[in-house]
Image 1 (tube, each protein chain N blue to C red):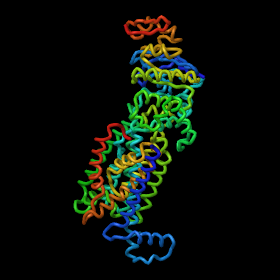
Image 2: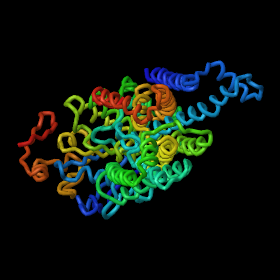
Image 3: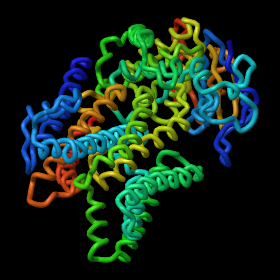
Image 4: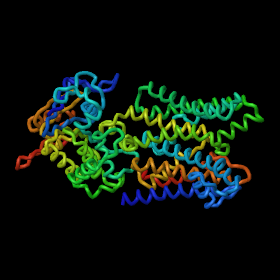
Length: 338
Length: 254
């Protein structure tokens, strides 16, 4: 029954990704047929002229293509980081920003907007803010030597996160209310509408690096999710593993937040869906989360740009979908997180 | 092969629990650590496992300090069976037993065919192969305890340390688990278990150490050590002895 579940579950995750890719490429204000996309990709690969109008090619390669890749990378990054953190913190209700990655990135971004940085300056400040915040949380958390190290870390994250939130509030008060404040608000709600081909490398490189580390360590995450003493008695150097996993998950989260702003819920909801499909074994859960997370955010992003005359911020959509899901989760999973 | 506590002081920083403990676990033997709740049994056991650093004295593995071994080296020699499993995720029994193989592979290693074969054979050995695909959250407490023993065996250790292995089990399951523990020593492993029940020590251990207020009150073969007088001192309450015509003995709280 177990291998069947994982095979079937993996196929479902792959189908969601495929559906997401098709929908994201074809649907929009400028609908494009499946065959046009195939022709355009074929001509790009072989160098044979496609015969498509330059407008169609531009939509595929300059507008939708980068946005599709960005959604894929952000969704996979947040989902993988969330799955890893849920195991590391032995708590299925943890999301990848529990250690302050998002609030640190938010402070970095609004500061950069306040100082009138360009788009790359804002992204760099957000990325750095996320990394610095998590490093600070870890440094403070590990100097406090009382009781459960995991709980101390989470509480430190919550406390420092709210301090960073106060910082974001202060910057918003200081901001020019006509240009800077709307830019900050928009950024804080998350969007991929401004994605350009140049954004892809700074997003995808750290995401791939962090995800590869998490993929390599995924079999150890099973034992790491057991109570601390059991994990160590099984032969796991838990302290070292914790640092490496936090660093890798923070890298993927910070890169995603820098590129797309704050998109909540994906890192919390997708690992649960993936666990439902392939079971709790991290050997299967991590890749399934990546695939499902990419597909999920592609679908959400397509919805965001087609739902109304104005783009709906991603953070709002993920919350509208995530909240009822979460309530259902709380109500239905009393008997353990299968 | 032996694990020994040598004049060991144990506890937490600023909160000593016990001291002056000298004990030895030998291959092929079952040692019971008997004492009232709050007497420091679990803390001593965690120190002997290397999960807590000794406050003074040392834990020696064949004369070598346990602290000189790496975490995986230690796990290949000594396995731990916790009192009960409180995992967050509903792993299958097979997956949980497979985690016993952690110390036998590198940090990035995927469990291989040999690891899966060892896990399957340990489930078989404990007679719970039929539970392989069941989530451990959905099986009984006794079955779960046997799964934890199977996981410890999958570490292929020389010693197994069990913390109150039957504390949360019903009457029938207690016997089942204790018989398996006895069998492990017959197979050549050194076994240490803690208990607050003198009858369990009497029925299933070769030697017993009485732990009271963080110190060893007496230590030796069960028949010699377990007398109603000593138990009365150990628990601070009178103890009655019941002797069967066949010579079997049991203790009752008086």
